[in-house]
Length: 442
Ligand code: G6P
Ligand code: MN
Image (cartoon, rainbow, N blue to C red):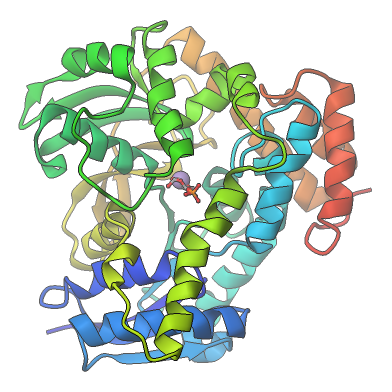
């Protein structure tokens, strides 16, 4: 049986234990010969590693587990690299969220100015990761990337390293499908969706349950209740109050526009004023995560180190871990499973630019994704997407050209920002906050 060396880049992430669990429950089909946690923050990774060691012991005690900060040790002969870096950690996410809110603008880690700031931090570290993989990993390596902002990462890496074997993915559509399945009282694996958009900016156009079209049924439900199931089963992912508000907010979109089912992230672009009103500028999602998910991990580490017992199941993140493992297995074994992933448009959506990085269904083969043809999309959606796509293009230009003006254009063009003057204030504050991370802008 073929075995794989798999690296988790961003080993110190709060998501690592959940991903490792999802990997190891597949050990009879997807057998690892080595699991490497790789991070530039040794201390954080050692801590999360305490939990991961227990997960390994629980599911595959023979597995060789390596923790390293050395890219050569990590990447040498690797088959798969799961990337989930968070450049600047939650402290910088907090800035991404709080700076725009100071000016009455949506404060979010991947949407609006926050996403642009995070993009400027992440582009070059992702390029560096690709270069390490090209240098040390097996020639058939695959990077499966969760690192955000995935839309900008996908665009930048495709432009700067077009030959890289990287597949950019997002768990939000799958998480919405999990909720759809709970609404329909079925297994999410029995659903098949049609979808178009950019990452964190798209719509489900059809949902089928074992071949039966259930789109209209879901649309009327979501127009009334949002994506909140009546009897939600528990998945640790997205169960905090702010996430419940997000799921519910879809009703305000779905009850107004009847064509499709929106990705939850559309709230930041279509309901920006409401989102700002319901945000606390002094206590954002980053604070909620630092006080919740992140604290739970480090508390558990402290418990283990003090010889106490820990309930590991609270770190098993459901669809988030399952999805990245499913995609990797389809790549590894040429399973040709159909998943939503980011690909170069190339005509998939006929009336969008061919170099846009779109999120559409694709069959995942061992040579990569084979996207489906979406056809033409209607004016409203096309207009929204073109604007957002141009924003993402401009921020990549800004990074590559070190251009302040391009960055300002990106901030100004974002649908979340009301004027050039506000854009400039936010950008200038963000330049100061991101001094240690951004390419210099002139
Ligand atoms: C979803 C998105 C991810 C994002 C995450 C944030 O899962 O797909 O891209 O990072 O939400 O969740 P959090 O719990 O950190 O706010
Ligand atoms: Mn995502």
